[in-house]
Image 1 (cartoon, rainbow, N blue to C red):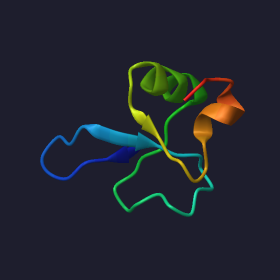
Image 2 (image 1 turned 90 degrees about the vertical axis):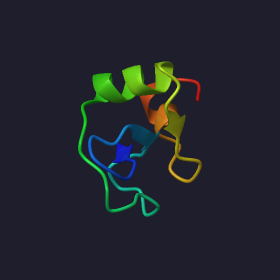
Image 3 (image 1 turned 180 degrees about the horizontal axis):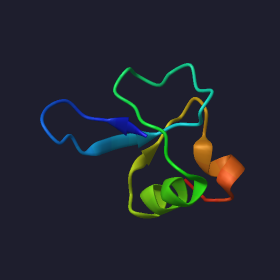
Length: 58
């Protein structure tokens, strides 16, 4: 999960763990958290397409 800038930054994008496009402001999340984030409307990375591996249309 990539986070925004600032104090208590909101999530901005979901990446796979091996994504080359993930920025420095990221933290690891579980598969279930990733599914929930995508379902909540957090953008999926267009490079690594995390929803594909999770079975979630993104």
